[in-house]
Image (cartoon, rainbow, N blue to C red; front, side, top):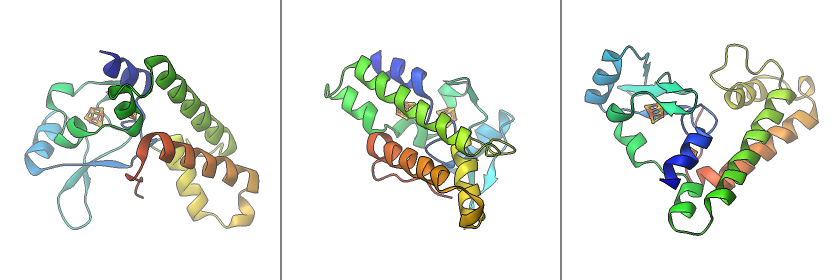
Length: 163
Ligand code: SF4
Ligand code: SF4
């Protein structure tokens, strides 16, 4: 129960903060397409579910019963720590709140990052990669770097974002 409570408080592995897409097996792609979700082509063949996931409503998965295997299996480091009793639910929610605050700081530091982007983090990453360094203030890059580092430390671990 507390595991799902934490995820409903978070949503970052579905909203584009941590990852860019979910890998799909062909039958999963067929099911999700049948639900009207837009998929994207995967380099090398096949399809992926782009994030922010179109099945996410607020912080709730509207395709829960039919979610892909990668979604069923995924647990971030924080959720594992909660499951193993290494942190309490309140402590874990505090980490999520701190992560949300860092993402908000990134959105403020990259004010155009939400325009046309799937998520503030993804927009900021793409802006930082595409723009010459003199066009983005050093402070903004530092806010982004610190947010990525926090997300790595508490959530992604070895599963870094791609793209
Ligand atoms: S990032 Fe972790 S805590 Fe957040 S929704 Fe995903 S699995 Fe749950
Ligand atoms: S299908 Fe559900 S669990 Fe999977 S990324 Fe989308 S919202 Fe998250």
